[in-house]
Length: 181
Image (cartoon, rainbow, N blue to C red; front, side):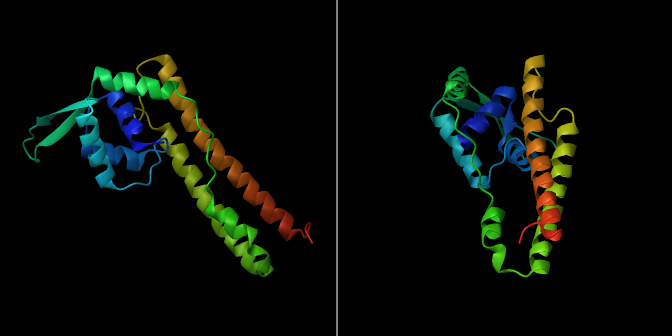
């Protein structure tokens, strides 16, 4: 996912300040993105320069003024063209699998220890994503179909962690039962 289209998508939902976009990325499962805050602001400038968004300044009593960004018709068209483009296959980047591939050198207790830690981390992620998916108002729901699509995106993320948890538990069980020699 490129940050440009994630921001356009969010702006198609409602106007956002740069700060609000940053918070949305930080708190969202659906918009995982590992970039820095400067990339958000650089992308907003790019969207303005390309005519895909406009902004205005909102003055606030107790806080500094903020720039609020809104998508343009050209931005909506750009977003639609991207949504219609060929979907990319999912990327699997799981550093733990690389660690595990070389874990035969560990003693049984060392291996079980890293598996236990991984299981704990996966379980925490699962709990966090389940909680995020329960929150109302965190995603667009302008139509029933849009609400359903967002529900399914969230469900996909939860199912990933459920599957990962099942897998690591099976792995630990089989190793501990000495099913693998």
